[in-house]
Amino acid sequence: MARKIKRHRNSQMVEQLRHARAVAGMERAEFFKNNGDPKQWRPVRKIAVNKRKRANKNACRGRVDR
Image (cartoon, rainbow, N blue to C red; front, side):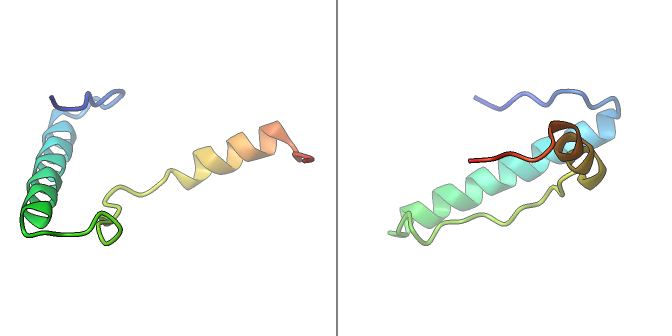
């Protein structure tokens, strides 16, 4: 079952993301089929974090004391 892709208006971007996820899934299946160790499996991040959104969110929350 494929993951849903939300909040993307550009259908071309949605198709590219679906394709990238499908390829990653096939690579993962092939890795484990060849006796790969789960500790070795760490897929490369393909989508960058929206830095402006994260900075605004952190600024809004303020300092967190533990």
